[in-house]
Amino acid sequence: MAGLREQKKKATRAAILNAAINLFGERGYERTSVSALAKAAGIGKGTIYSYFSSKNEILLAFCEEELAFINSEIKSKLDPDAPLAEKMLLVFMSEFRFVTKNKEFGRTLLREMTFPKEITIDKSLKIEERFLNLFVSLLQEAQEKGVLRTDIELIIAGGHFYSLYLMTLSAWYSGRLLSEEDVQETLKLLIDQALTGLLPRKIPASSTTDQRNNS
Amino acid sequence: MAGLREQKKKATRAAILNAAINLFGERGYERTSVSALAKAAGIGKGTIYSYFSSKNEILLAFCEEELAFINSEIKSKLDPDAPLAEKMLLVFMSEFRFVTKNKEFGRTLLREMTFPKEITIDKSLKIEERFLNLFVSLLQEAQEKGVLRTDIELIIAGGHFYSLYLMTLSAWYSGRLLSEEDVQETLKLLIDQALTGLLPRKIPASSTTDQRNNS
DNA sequence: GAGGAAAAATGACTGTGGTCAACTTTTATT
DNA sequence: AATAAAAGTTGACCACAGTCATTTTTCCTC
Picture 1 (cartoon, each protein chain N blue to C red):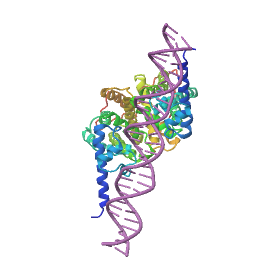
Picture 2 (picture 1 turned 180 degrees about the vertical axis):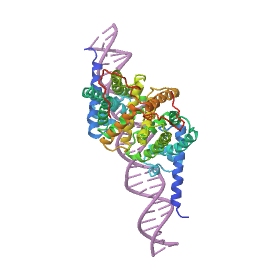
Picture 3 (picture 1 turned 90 degrees about the vertical axis):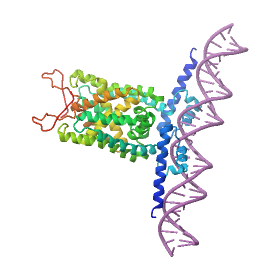
Picture 4 (picture 1 turned 90 degrees about the horizontal axis):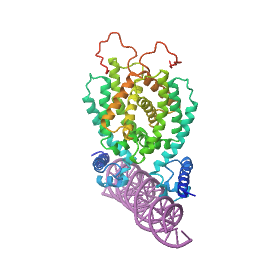
């Protein structure tokens, strides 16, 4: 059979990821050592590092699979006729729940995703891409429906929403937002702000202050 | 003299911070070990941990001092008559330059600030507070000038801008934005978006699609 | 200033992530 | 099937962050 080597590699990789799912779930990410992971996978410690460049990358690989599943699930839940803000909120909250299911786990993931080290940048980008695409496709639909400006790049608008999501997560991690309800409420406000803008709603008929705006 | 103990503690703390400034600057954060820090400060390694709860907290303490300085400098540079967007951009870019002067250093700081561990949450909040206040005071002025909606909470609006800043930093760290010019350009777009909103500029006179908006 | 209690400093020690030279297995070649 | 080259595996080893029982210094009381 051609490719015994390839076969074994696949199996080993799967074994590592499987051990990761079990041990990370049982004892958490930090309290699981790479040696323990190796032992659970039935291989030597050094071998792990010919499959993953660091312990954090194992986490990313694990999350990539999970997120692929979660994302498709979210997509199927979305009511295509709901308002954009509502859809966004649903996406945000689903991802929030996933990523904060285990606090420490989520923190490591977010740290690595948001401010990646060179060593994990590829994986990190891949996952983020998948995530951003979710927004971008929502925004594209919105544009087609005429409920979103068409004079802006989708990726920038997507980034805008993504930033609100990150911010809210950060606020949760630093204890500014305590409950899921807080998070949801804040996200709602932020999404609304992003949609309607921060400029005053009506231009005052007469103004005493110098009022400069860029283009 | 009353308080020899206090005096010594202050001196030791200063010595550690001083060693940190030198060694972090010379060899970078990660390549500087706590033992080396202790040796440079002329104290034992264990002592460090009765002044700081972790290596990361030393970084935060160091940055707190630096940022206090940077922030006041930024404030003095701000032309009070410039448009809000311009002021925001100046603040963002100044902070961006500071935090990315040393890439790895900035990454550790941002990770700890954005997704802090319980052990460093206090310091992290303190620094973030200082940072947010900068925005909030800008926004307050803007409200008084009538160039910013008054029906929103300042802290939420401040968070909104802060989120754009974080996002852009993240994009830089993951290699999406490569140069300072890219960063500035993107920030400009995002700030403009935030101000003007993502909804279509003019409500179409006649529409064929269902167009629901929340409140 | 002697004695003892409280506070602070210490460095040997622990468990960790990651490395690497030596070793084993697979593949290609004859 | 023998052999050599290439690919893959390994665990002893390293440097590190953080801990803690022990020692040293400061303070308070008489």
